[in-house]
Amino acid sequence: MTASALTVEPSSTRWSAVLLIVGAGIVTALQVGKAAIAAPLLQSDLGIGLAAIGWLTGIFAVLGLVGGIPTGALVAGFGGRRLLIMGLLTSVFGAGFGAVVSGFSGLLLARVVEGAGFLLVTVAAPSILSQVAKPSDRDVAFALWSCFMPVGLAIAMLTGPMFDDWRTIWWASCLLTLIICLLVPLMVPVDDEHRPWSWRKLKTDTMSVFHARVPVALAGMLALYSLMFFALFSFLPVLLMEQMDVSHQTAGLLSALASAVNVLGNLAAGLLLSRGVSRAVLLAGASITMGVVSFGIFLPLLPAAATFALCMLFSAVGGLIPATILSSAPIVAPTAGLVPVVLGLIIQGNNLGQILGPTAVGSAIERFGWSSAAFAVAGAALVATALVAAFGKRIKQMPE
Image 1 (spheres, rainbow, N blue to C red):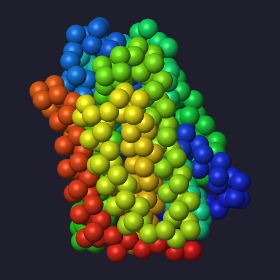
Image 2 (cartoon, helix red, strand yellow; image 1 turned 135 degrees about the vertical axis):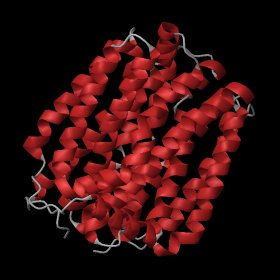
Image 3 (cartoon, rainbow, N blue to C red; image 1 turned 30 degrees about the vertical axis):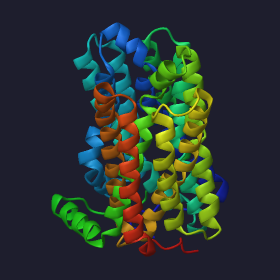
């Protein structure tokens, strides 16, 4: 038990808290996905290209890239519940601000604010999960949590085409986030103890986590997964409209479906891990599969229907990775009290990939065409597999 323990609640109360925490992640993920599905509306209204759209998606994670570990230390020091509420309120402000700005620079600034909220939520929420779920239930709880991104993206892709104005999308996301924020104090247990926070303590904790090496490897694996995932899903609506000649609304529906099947991989990871399947096998197998199928997606080799089927496979198999990595944080943390810091580092890895995927791949697509994305994804898959080979044996099964 960490010093940042939560008060003991009945099992039913714990699972209601888990579901609400997952809901908080979903509404913040929706903030990410709304930029992708609103791309045609943003291009028309603001006169911007794919590279700029990539920055609107990628800048969302800039603060996460540099602030993951400090945020983890803040969670340990001030409590996950308090930081979760603060993150949701920051997202509300960022979405509302973005809805009223008049140009690209203002919208970019609003995305930075939303990125701060996303960071607070995505570090605080799993830190709370590691406390409200029993050790034997953590694989399942983290599998549910890892669904937040694909579910949020799917909701954005599904509902986005229903709006004729991108500003209305921003207002809707603002309202949903506010509703979840108001429910958190009612359903999430209060932290009863916190670790002292200081810059010196932050430095010591950071060195301890980096010295352990395995948390760094996990962060690298999630960075590579995030790069691969967002290399496809940041531009999937545009890819479908160009290669399958479908309408904006149909592209949104298909993108939502492809994003939603990622949940199957998330949930499958929880089930497989609870039955003793090796974490290394899941990570390596999923990485290799994503790398191979990327060629069928981005190269003009297959009919449109087959290409979309590969997008579904890419998403479903990829879902094994984040659930496995996130549930490994309590295992690889040097001490129980450093779990939030390890999660912060892992989130930094996720945000690094989230930045590199849309920006680098978006620029490559504009210059070299869609086929260049296949080589970027395959390269990332090879590096991820190498990391699993080097560190996989040190990621043990979750203790009972």
